[in-house]
Amino acid sequence: MSTTTPANHAFDRAIALQPLSNNLFSGKTSDDYQNMVGPFGGLTAAILLNAVLQHPERIGEPISLTINFAGPVQPGAFEIEATPIRTNRSTQHWLLLQRQGGEVVTSGTAFFATRRETWSEQQQPMPEAVSADSLPLVIRKERRWFENYDFRYVSGIFNPAIPSEQESGDTDTLLWTRDIPARQLDFASLTAMGDVFAPRIFHRRQRFTPAGTVSLTHYFHADAAQLIQSGDRHILGHARAARMHNNYSDQIAHLWSDDGVLLLTSTQVAYYKE
Image 1 (cartoon, rainbow, N blue to C red):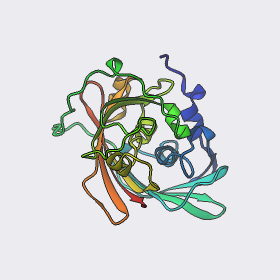
Image 2 (image 1 turned 135 degrees about the vertical axis):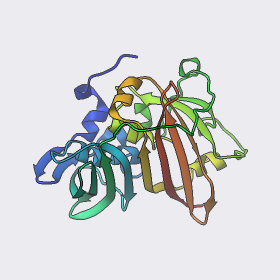
Image 3 (image 1 turned 180 degrees about the vertical axis):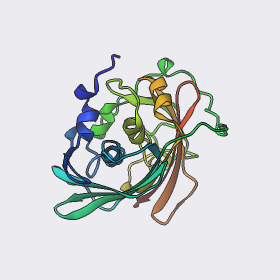
Image 4 (image 1 turned 120 degrees about the vertical axis):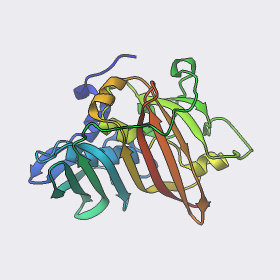
């Protein structure tokens, strides 16, 4: 699998933004990343992060990102407002708003900072997993955006193409993933990959049910240099839920590089219906 240049990759075209004025950018939805209702949520999160990444006043690198999905993003044009609301010597806080037709469809906040070398330790080890190359590529066709990711399941697959009358005993999924075609990992693509897991209610009950993410928060543990070291190789992701109760479920996910470095921790809350 060869690596494409950013200008030629569907992901980079999908997150592309054009500056309109101070703090304001324009973009448009991509058919390549459509989900059940509107675009894949991980892509929307990457678009909002990208507004900060290309903002001329940005300092440092992303440390955390929170995205709230207020309403469905309709096909077509949208605007992103990225406003630095507080900048200190080494830290910066951002307010993010995505609008269509004058209405806010997505909101968010981001925290950026300049990292300084200090004592460091990784408490969350990478789970044991066979190599990505030893696992079959699972071709997913249920949603358009699935076709842009290489999924290789170690355990915990939800695949409606495989009939099952039994519910899963847990909500855990362990998988290798990367972009299709392979693409150098960066903050934007890592943001999107943090949301590639099927809703935990799908996995637990082994069937589709109306569901969708309401809010997600990413914590970035890696800096740009560590992402460059990851290249375009697969990253390992693990996701599980702690509780599903009265229409809402959480999800906790971690993503590691193939050499065991924890890159991202993600938490989210999703609604579901019977």
